[in-house]
Image (cartoon, rainbow, N blue to C red; front, side, top):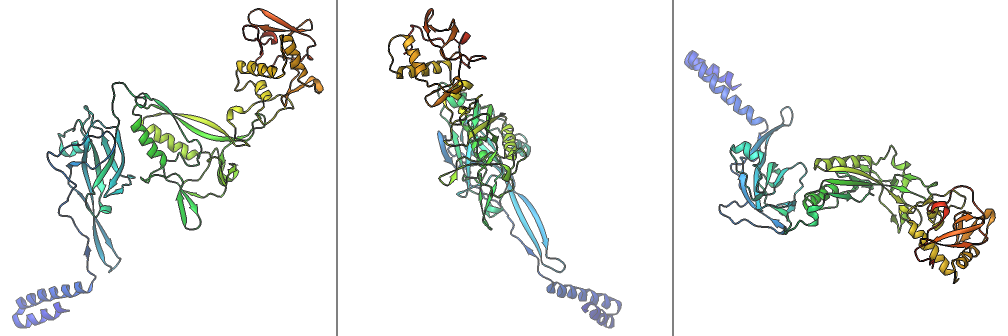
Length: 487
């Protein structure tokens, strides 16, 4: 409007030249009025310079032994990287311009070589290293320049003999667009004349084998109620998965590690091998987790074995989920380690016995209690010497003295006869075995004592068709210790 009015006034006063001058002035006024009616453009703060933590030429360099918290000195820094973001509130809305900054720099930690770096603090608070690119140079005599420093500077120093870390494009938004004051947990084991055990260690077994998400490398949250949730596998100050923190510490403490046996536990429910079912288990049926759900071998949570309770809590952790096992294998292989899958069986039955007590039985007298007869007949977990020792111990308890014949008679008389030629001994049922006290020769039993001595027994127990029980000697003869003494 001002442009039209001033253009006509200028034409009447000064002709064509006055019209042009009036039109120009009117256009400027119109633009100023229209701009005053639109929302103002807001701009975020911008950095003119960047301040860093202490960096002094000639400052003393620390030397760590054991584990210490070190602040360090900034030994290199690139120009900060500025990223501009424009946002608009829609047609006729407010326009906003924001600036984000990131910085690449290196911090010297002290004299090398060190074993590694653990936790990191920024402005006194634990720094979440998720998504942060941090490279650790241990300060060896043959270390090479960092690739970022070499790319920026061209000919770059390797800082040999100095341990340092390099941060690449560390976002500064969480620290008020400035470089934070950093502190590092540094590990360094004292070196002796000879290599220590951890220096010689090349293989370990990774436990625990029970825990539904104990092997997951990402944080898994468990829902509690409508609004609350708790982490399943994050129990450290760094905010990372427990296995990631543990593996980092393991690589620091055992630098020559090459192989890891990854234990994964399932659950058995009976000591009788013919009745025992080995299945994956869970500690709760109603547990809801995210972002990972529990699944093993195609079974969902409601289809798995439910671990028994002790004092109001599960006796074991659940079987690690298949996805968590895959994540653990990837993490181990990324560290250059060879991985062996180690299946393990937990016995979730009364008494919680060791898995080695699972025994087979070929008769109706099998028991789930892991009795001596079942173990002896299956030959599991006990050596032949142990069986001889048990027999001598039982004979000694009969109170019989004198010859082996008398003690052998006491053996038979102390085992009451049952139907089918079986005998019961110490609460367990014994099979009618041809070799219970030796092989048969003319109706007499021969028992070898030492190298050449023999004793005979009368009234042998009823013979058994078929091969002798497991663990018997040749022709069913049980060898006794040298010297001919059974007790």
